[in-house]
Image 1 (cartoon, one colour):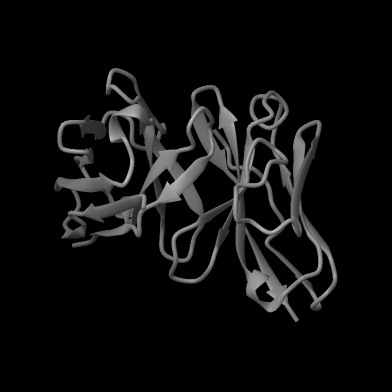
Image 2: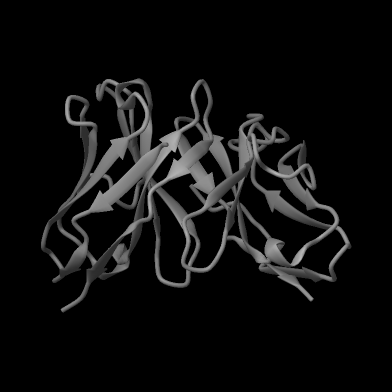
Length: 119
Length: 109
């Protein structure tokens, strides 16, 4: 069974950093592109970033470029999102998402990790 | 990248059909047959319902169907059931990125 389990969320002050992790199981993690998608409280889904299966290619939304870094450890089946210089508008549930094999849609989602940025 | 445009809400009675539109631009929806649709119940993670405009993942009811014309994609749900009440989001590939719609709240009366 495919499972994606995020961790590392919490309450931080503006300007602080936080690193999210996503533990993957039930599939060959190293074969799949992975993404992060976030959802502010009561709001819609927003795409954040993506990383290729081997980690060599990354892409970011303009709103997080230069502040967030996506990475992965294929030996440990884990995806990361390093978030620096956090702002109040980064407050959201962050989902770790798998891309459908040979496709572009998101076929599996984690349960999400809540990040709250507030003083 | 601006969000795709969806109606904020739609409603219908059980057994009826509804269609949710998703309007983008020639840079996203209009350029790729890579629109997907997601269903999200309150407090839950989204679930893939349609991918590549009109394909259904295994396990998704054939009451759900998708289509596209120009810069607008559509999700149709026929034979509405109470459990279809949820938020629905479209998403398009856009030059290595993704762009979501603002979401549509479906109410089954």
